[in-house]
Amino acid sequence: MSSSFLRFFIPCSIAAWWLLAFQGQSINYIPSHYESQKNSSIKQSLVSSIDREKLHQALQGDMELIYHLMVLWDAEAGLLQKQGLNVERLEPEDLIQASHCIENIRENSEIKKGRFLPQTVNAASLLLTLLDPEQIVALPEYVRTQSHLYPQHERVPLTIYSGSVNEEHIYRNKPDLAFVASYSLPSTVSALEKQGIDLCFLDQTDSIAGIQENILRVGELCAVPQKAHLLSLFIQSAMAALDNRLILAKQEAYSNPKRPLYLSYYTRYYTPSKNILQGELLKRAKLDSLLASSLHEHERKIPLSKEEIHHLAPDYLYLSTPQDNSIAHSFFNDPTFQEIPAVRNGQVHLIDESVQESPNHFVVLAYYDLLSPLIEYKAANHGS
Image (tube, rainbow, N blue to C red; front, side):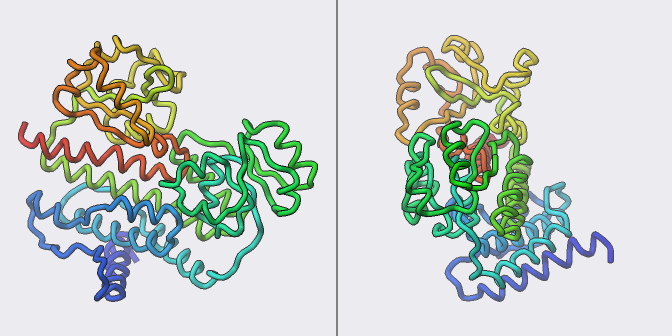
């Protein structure tokens, strides 16, 4: 059976099944206009909008929604290919694997094995998505401060403060495995070892591929390999779906920001280098023009003075800011920045720092937040 046939038959047949299954439901993910005309407006009608709340729901562990979105996005990509667009999509074998994963998850939905202690935020975020909260012994304090990302944290009673664990609480709850990192407090690692708890060192990563590797590793150790594999494939599928919407935006307008800049703030302003996750995302979105200097090959974040930012004169700017928007308030009230083209033209885009700094599967939300204003920018500059 040829690969081209598989690409057409598998997504379309599964999409048809989902269409029947969801008939009469209030949520309609399936685009209604599949006419085969070759203009950009028709191509836009072939894809559904990606809802951020649904994306977040999927990343919190809704495996049925994960699979449904993957099938939908692949079917849409197939339709765009028929319109002559060079778009991204999963390999047919990946979609088949996703189908096997969801079938196994459904059959084993009641099986719960083991209790686990995530000492780091990175591990905690993965366990909250892959496991039932009752299987998690405790959570780092920071996770509880990010309820907009991790609403399910309330079902885990114990808290790890400042990276250290309460030995008595841990002893009473007897985790089967603890996830630590090379940067964990030595006293914490020693306390867990004294109680005979098995340890897994899981460091955060600076690449999408590394995030997927961490997901698969956690899935194997926590006896949820099918969920982990489906989540890993979902990252690949979601990133491709977002890329495809940027490709469609380029059909409407071909102008890119000429001098884009991404800023974060920790006692001073920084822009990410190509060596960290934000740099990878910016490069993927073709927004890395101000990161390409060979002077910063080995740096993670490049410090910038206010005068340097003014001199760079970005025409399109991301400002990574905490939930309270305190950095944004300071930025917009600084006279140094008033004449920057991005400020004058209303092209300063505030993005959630907690999402952008998450070295885990929430990289999908980070990429969504980067692309959303960019797609609007392209539409606004159509014909310029």
